[in-house]
Length: 122
Image (cartoon, rainbow, N blue to C red; front, top):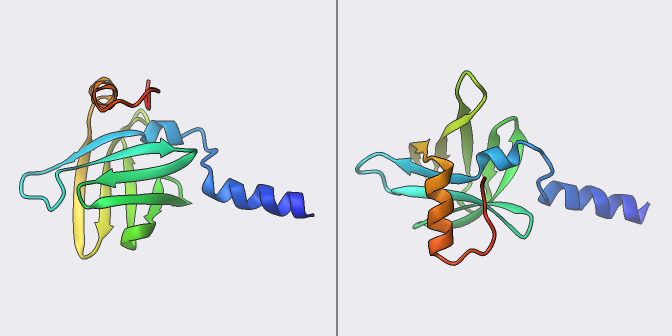
């Protein structure tokens, strides 16, 4: 029973959903936004969102909807008609930020420039 509890609790913190990889990348916000961009990454198996405002874990609450735990907000990822992730809408700290996802190749190159040894997206 203890093993089952440990497995269940780790499943809550480690994303196992195959769609998680589709969320990874850089999202840019419009001119004048309080945050210019966010990066969604996997760090030690935990889905994270990083920006100039800080870093936060993301906890799934519904399909394509995540709680931004450190900022008491939500991130809802948007998809096109082909089910490809194309953006994110963030509601946090009184702001609504709508961002567009950058192409994967530019995010991968930026990750390599800052010294990440493994590709975050393909």
